[in-house]
Amino acid sequence: MSKDAEVTRTLLVQAARRRFAFDGYRATTVRDIAADAGVNVALINRYFVSKEGLFRACLDRVVRDLGAVERPAPDPERTLRDLIGHVVRSPTDEDSMQLMLLLRSSGDDGADAIRRETLRRYAERLAGAVGGEVTDDLLVRAEIALAVVLGMTMLRTSTQVEPLASADHDAVAVPLDDALRALLTGGTGH
Image (cartoon, rainbow, N blue to C red; front, side, top):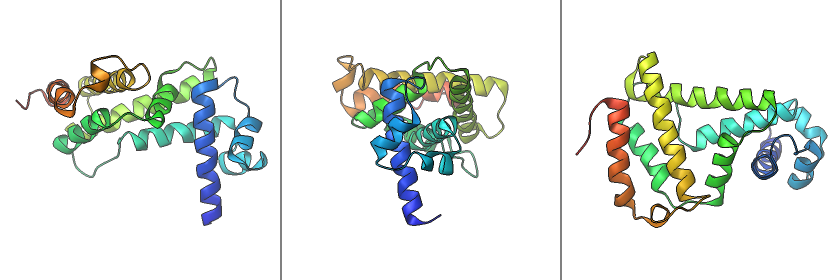
């Protein structure tokens, strides 16, 4: 793919994430997204096939940005550090948009199915990153850990619940590490 095509794809994903997050899936049109990105609407079909394909690309990007990467071997320490790092980093509008994409009901069955699939895939990657073989028990624990991370991030960013929103790194990281470690590895680090 050419550099211009990659730039265009990135602009479309960024514009779509904003629109989907604030206006919702159903109310967002491909014309709105193309106008926001400053490109021809036909490029959405060229790069993503459809509005649904663009929505999927937005959620795939969210999973990458939240650190759900596949690792060659389980690495619980790095995985926990990455998850905790996401929660304690300074909240940004970008974080809020990502969460709204993952958490907001769209009213569209196709979009909701993509959202469920994305969250399930993220939990599967998380389970594999900490435990290797993904059992039903570990997957449930990973889904609970994901709920904790998403909830904490939402409380710190879009809803800005105090004192959590302005708590310093250690005030958040230490108890979060204990909770995630207990969920994902069966122990505590402290």
